Image (cartoon, helix red, strand yellow):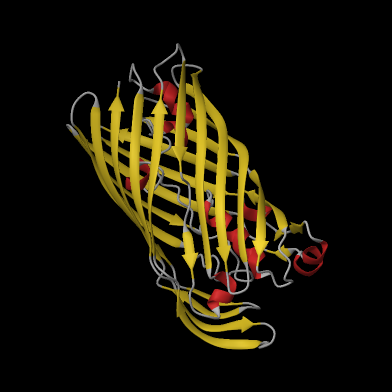
Length: 397
């Protein structure tokens, strides 16, 4: 049964995990520097991903491309308390353990085409997750010895200017996921291609103020995998459908001379994730391992704030966000020990000439300590942090 939780939660954690958990919404230099408060005022190549409607308002006559490389560091997570261990122990075992720290390099690409009348095209390739969580010590390793996932999202977009003040945009999302899951008793690998869409509208209320609405659709991930070292002794194919929930953003930006401030409210509809239901090709595994697992996640909200100040060729940025976790106490476990987070960020860009701009940004997320008391755990997760450092180059041609 633990195998099922790990493959599902690793996928959810590492593929656009909306709202809490190990979501990585920062897929551009501006997003890192502004704690993802970069929707209403988005004007660079990354508008193709964050707000495709804004591409139509671009003042650039030609194409714009942005390349980013982001370092992601995840601290170890400490847990102290008790852990339920099943047969043959069948008792709560005292536990004082830590997960492994993790380090990743994630590249991203954004592109916006020249204007074609009132229309522009865009294209983004991002890695919205691709993280890992490992617990080497028992009993934590019984639940989550390792889960690792690599992801790529391809997002072609288009925008159209309806009037001088109103633009719309949208696109197709193609998401590929490849995962590895291990614990003390099971190994599993799985991958998936799944599809969704995104839409956006931007309204320039006046020359200084922009209101933007964006929506990313729910994606039903149909993950096909294979198991080995199962509790039944039988290897088999397995399939599970996982909902990646819809996400809605409302953003408002206002510019005063050389300074722009932006506020974003992001609503993530995680309540669609009620249970995991695995379907095994082998009837023995289906009978013994195929019982649906309750999850009962809740909708979650993130609040984001960013400020941008321009000084000639230099642009300075800072941001703050508060991100709520969707995971209830009743179902939290080692696979995804998520909690509410305070996020702080800063960054800067330098315009070298008319064609090139270089940027550097950093972000840290501080996750609140979380006490838990459910059927498997009675204790507290502490000291969870994540760090991002991003470098970028923007090229206009």
